[in-house]
Each structure stands twice: as structure tokens, then as C-alpha cells.
Length: 85
Image (cartoon, rainbow, N blue to C red; front, side):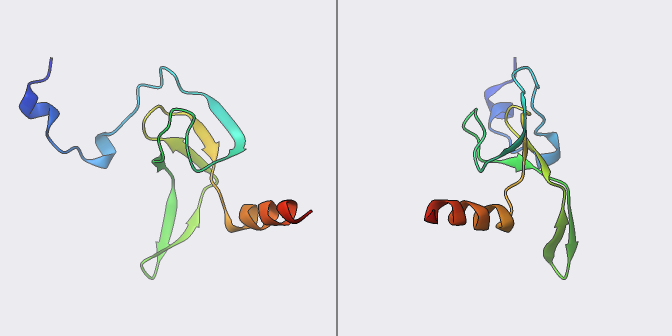
């Protein structure tokens, strides 16, 4: 069992790995929040000129490991068009 000091230590993001015990593959669902309540996701991205240039459309919840598709500006445009109908 970790000591109270170990519980309060900041972890490196690379060390924040879910157990995958309750992970579900929700793809192709697009969301900003996981079914577990987390809003933090792990993505794969490239950078150019200090900005995200490209990213994969798969993302993984950092808390439980569930997988979703990443939300994109195109998805927002489609959602707004549907709401206007």
C-alpha cells in the first residue's frame, strides 16, 4: 500500500496508465467526455510551429482506457447544421 507521501506525489503524464479493467471501445462515437466522467484523453498528434498540426482520430480515456473518436471542427459543423433543421 502506498504511503501518504507517495499518494500526494505528482505523476508524469506518461505514467498515468489506466487498468483497462472497465475499458470499452465506443468508436465511432464522438465525445468530449468519457462514460466514466473523465474529460482527459490520450491522443497521438504532430506539431508544427508550436501548434497541433495533425492528429489521429482515435483517442483513449486517461482514466479508464475506453476509446472514442476525437471531435473535430467538421463534426461541429455537422452538429450545428442538424440543429438548424
